[in-house]
Image: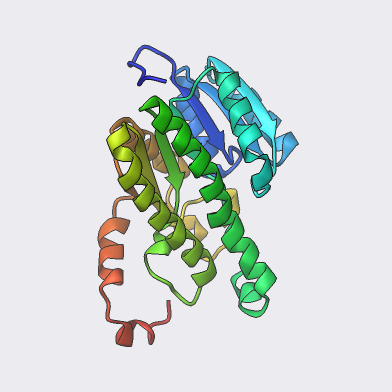
Length: 253
C-alpha cells in the first residue's frame, strides 16, 4: 500500500458516505477518477450516491450497507472493503450524529447513543484501520470531528464531548503512527449547510458544503494534521478556548 503518484487513481474507503460533507468530497474524488468503496446505512440513498459518482468519473465504485454502530462487524466489513479496492490509500470517516441535546440532558440512554456513535464506533474503526496502515507504512486516515469538541457549551455539550473525545483519540493516534508513515487528519468543521443541519437556526448562513469539501481534499493532499474549515474557526476557537471558566459559564452559548 504505497503512496500513489498523481497519475494513479487513489483507492478510497468512505465510511458514512451518504452524509452531506462526505458526498460532496466524493464528488471531487470521482472527478479525479478515484476508486471508491462507500459504506452507509441507508441502502436506497447509498445506491443513488454510488450511481452519481460513477457518472462523475469514478474509475471504480463498490458499496456495502452497514450500521457502523455495530462494532462486531467492523473487522469483516473493513477487510471486505479493502479487498474490493485491492488496497487502500485513504480512509475517510464521516460517521456521526448531532443527537438530541435536550433529550440527552434528561435521558442517559440518549446521551450514551450520541457518545457511542460519535466516539466508540469511530475508535473501533480507526483502531483496525490504523493497524492495517502501520503494517504497510503508508496511508491516510481522514476523520470528521468538529469545532464543537474544542470547548463544552450548554447548547450541545453531549455532541461536543463526543467530538472532544474523538479529537483527543486522533491526536494520540497521530503521535503513535506518524513515525510509521501514516497520516492522521482531524477535520474540524464549523456549521455546514447540509441535510443534517437544515432545520437549525440560521442554517442559511452556514458554510457551503462544496467549499468545505474542497478544503478537505486539499488538506488530505498536503498531509495536514488538523483542518479547521472554514479557516475562520481556527482563531475563533482559539479565543473561545482561552475564555476563563468563571466568565465562560455565564455566557449564553
